[in-house]
Every structure is written in C-alpha cells, then in structure tokens.
Image (cartoon, rainbow, N blue to C red; front, top):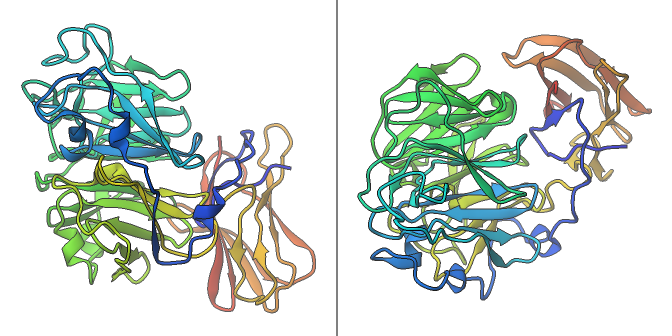
Length: 455
C-alpha cells in the first residue's frame, strides 16, 4: 500500500502512483535539535573544471557573485548554478548528494565560442549568469527552472525561460509566447507551488506565474518593491508566497491574488529582514519559515508571527558577501537544512527539530496519546474516477479527536466528531477535483494537517 511521502503540511497527487522513498541518511536524521554539522572535505572548489573557462574571478564566482541553488527531492541533491557578468563564464551545474555527501558535475561547461553576451550560446545551452533567487524545481515535471539574471560578458539581462531535465541533463529553451517578467536582470525571487503546479516569480514590479505544462507566463499582480536582493518561499497549504530581504518582509496570497503583507507584522526578525539576499526555506515538520544570513538561523512561527534566533555554535559566522538565496534549502526526508556558503568552505547542515522527517511513512506525535509512538497517514487507492479514502490511525488516543476537511479558504466541508481510540477513521473526501485541507484535533491541539489535491 503506498504511503504519504511528506510531513506536516502534505501534498498528494491523489490519483498518481507514489514511488518508494530511499533510505534517509541516518547521520543527518539523527542529529540533535538546534545543531550544526559540517561535512569534512566537501569543498566545491575541488570540482571546478579544467581547463579554465573564463572570467576575472573564476569558479569561486559560482557561489560568491549573486548566485543561488535549489534542492531536488527526487535525487536528494543540492544543485548550484551561477557565474555571470565579468566574474565567470562557465555554465556547468554542480550537484551535492545527500546520500554520498559528495559533489559531482551534473553538467559540463560549454566550450563553444563565444561564451558571453548572448543567450542561448551557439551550442544551444544557456549563458552563465548571476542567478540570484531565479532558480526553482518544477516537481511534477522533474525540471530545474531558470529565468533572468545578469549574463556573462556585458552583464545585461537575459529574458530566456530555461528548464533543465534532471534525468537527461539536457537544457531546453522554452521560448514561451506572450509577456514575460520585465525586470530580468537582478534581484528577482521565485519558488514552485506544488498545488497549482506553477512557479511563482517576483521581479521588482510585479508577481508572475509560470505554467510549465502550458508553457505560459501570466502576470498576477502589479506590485512594486525594493530592488534589493531577496529570497522567496511558497508555503503551499497556507497558499502564501513569502519574500524576505533588503528591509522587506512581503506576503502574497496565492488564492486571492493580493498583497497581504499588512497582516504579517512579525517580531524579533529585524536583522534577517534587513539582510542582503538571505537564505530562507520552509520547514514542513515544524510549520516554520527558517532564514539564514550568518551565525544562527532565525525561525518564524507562522502562528505567533514571532522570529526566534537559534544556536550559532558550529555555523558559518557570515554569509557570502553577495547573498545566499537558494543555497540554503530544507531536506524533508532527513529533516535538515543544507547550506552551501562558499566553494572553499565545507558544506553545512542545520537541524531545527529532532528526529527524521519523511521516508516511507509519516511520523506525527499524537499529543493526546503520550507514549504511544508516532502516527502514520496512509493513502488508500480509490476506484477509477473516484477519490481515494484517507486513513488516520488513532490507536491509543486518550481523548476526543475531531477531524475536519476544509477548502483552501478555510471553509468547512465535512466534519467527523468525537472519534475514539478503536480502529481507524476512514475519510471519504469530497467528490470532484479540488484542493482540500484535512486537520485532526485532540486536547485542543492540531496534531495532524494534510493538503490533498486532485491529480
């Protein structure tokens, strides 16, 4: 029977097959809470290509010169891509494996001529560029997404929409018709929304979405903001797109297509909000945004809207001069954050909460049943053309458990009350296509939350 591969706020293509997750890296999964871990001899610089590709700063510019990265859950690897302007002309992609804790070159650099001032290059591959926060992973298509940046050579903006197929390692110029984001040089932010299957993208003037399946950009909102470097993160179950950095903490409501920043006045995070291109990622186990720009991370409780500064012991004391962007990412299975801060520094990991994340099952503590271990969510296959049923094991519950199904605007669809310890609760989900939030409450606390979407 297939089981859910996500934790906390969960995303299920309910009519799709689920692959069996690989065994987690136990060394990372077993790290204590609020600790940093450094992988020895893991400098990226050892993998810089020879002969030299070109640019005044060489391979180190892949990280240091306004460049980002992204995490690929399917291959459990962190990708780093950059260069650009006069700093570095190499367009190779680097990959760090969570399993082996080592680097490889996912793609080799182009050796065509010229390597600058045009996109695509003569060999059909993208020119190197400062990538800022322009990179995202289109999960349902298994493609790396890239748009914009300051291209190698003259540093001008590029407006080509690129995808990289992770399996074949082949780049594709998507050439979508119509309007594309205009502020394509610098300081954009992006992230993938698995519910809508869109990339959310912000330039300094507007919010856009990119639909890979339809190969189309759409402007969602005119929204001017700082030109400074920022990091964007989608929190899918809350239907929110957060952007942080350069003195701004902005929030876009994906469902309502509007700015809701005024209702998100946070406390305790002034230093991270003022940061220059900080890293930020969503921790699905604790339902927190976690941000880094040197030393200890800042963790934002999305309920209280309060930031907490965590331990700096073992952390890199300062971020790379020109920002972190997507080189700080959450790794769900091991429940850790990965950081690539400099090609001459070792790769670092940070663990906010103890224990593993997700593997072949979901582990959720039941506050109403102390000592009974962890709960699991199981997705039962449904008949053709129908929604499957959702099973929440409730063995060992010592108090009333209430379960509700809501739409994405928080409106109750179905409620199951006073569920007791015996057996399991089978939820027949609402018919038809849609996105639904399932919550289970016990002893006044939410102990389970899952987002389900029709395929």
